Image (cartoon, rainbow, N blue to C red):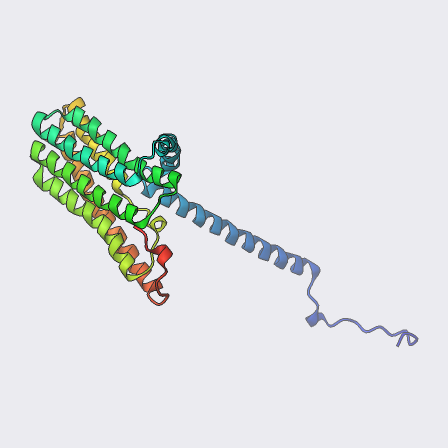
Length: 267
């Protein structure tokens, strides 16, 4: 009672000192900051890892911007993107015939790069003209496989490195098949397959190593630079196959109960 002059003292067991409460708040705040910092660090490491998996990922946006200008010109000339695909394949086959006839490695490498640029324009023209289609994508993929096989077998004939080229080519074809086969089981997207050695990386390393072996005619361990390039390609392509098999396993286990969504079924 207020008039009695008696005051009830607080229960010591139910009272937390102010300093202890402040310390608890600070500890919780520090723990939260540590968790946030760890999450940011993990996200950064994941993004850096994805960036290092693809040798040319950093430059693909710039390359797309570069092809936009000639693509607009080809659209104005009413060139169909599928025609560019066939022209690129025909040019690659003609380049292979030229290499077999002349054995001129540097000219062949230049022609192969030119045909590769022509092949890269078909997608840019399709997007610029609004003619993107599943058939065009399918035709481009099939032409790419024929072109890659023709170049590899031609170089194997000229250089004599049959077993290394064959090992690399099997890995290269399995890299494409691993993704295509996974899409028959579960929905997948192209953006979900950032891998060590995709087609652009393979082509650049293959043609670059072939040209370098002529410009720098030196041997290492009894073999020229192109032989060692093939060793690296053979190992890297099969590592990419294993990488895609492992990713396909994860996708199939995660998505096998979700059904099929047509927007994912692209190659």
